[in-house]
Amino acid sequence: MYCPNCRGEFVAGVEVCNSCDIALVDALPEEPERPPIDWITVATYREPAQARLASEYLEAADLTVQLTNEYTIGVNWLLATGIGEVGLQVPAEQEQLARQALESMTVDPEKSDEPAEFAGGHVDQATLERARRDNRYKVLLTLVVAAPVVFLFGLLAYLGRSDQESTSDARDSDA
Image (cartoon, rainbow, N blue to C red; front, side):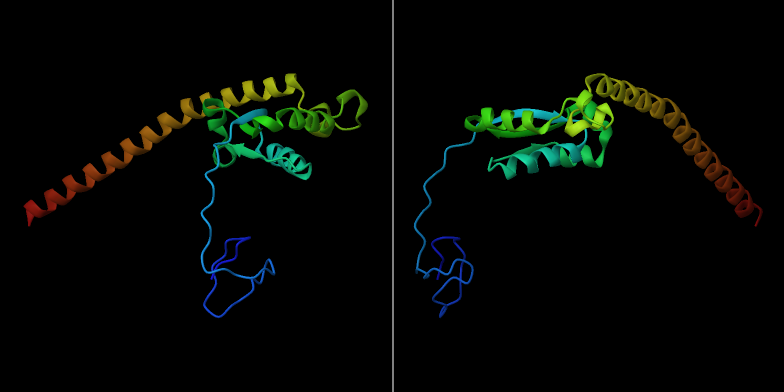
């Protein structure tokens, strides 16, 4: 038994879907094949939280939304430089409505009491560029400092193991 509305499957003997309150049928009709959706990126965000807020704003306006790179950037923000920022996408036919909704979401930083980089979801371009530049230096500094330190610890561990093996071999030959 199946629900024709939510397409849920039920055990024999059940006659009505408990979610939809619709009579069940023996078999579901085949779903028509849907054409693929042409997704358009209407905005990008450095922070996944900003992208999530914008997507919820668009969903509240009954628009279909998807985010790209949200979880990847959330796990490792260093990847944002390589793969891009979190993308906010809508179907092509909803692009204008989405852009209008996003425009109404932002506030002119000079008319807001909040700092410019947080005013109504607006990200000041100079602040964004400064953050990107700072992140590049952090990545470079991490690589320059971390690589030699890891190499040094590996070398010390190897030398320590070699000393233990040679001492162990000397004891075995003495015995």
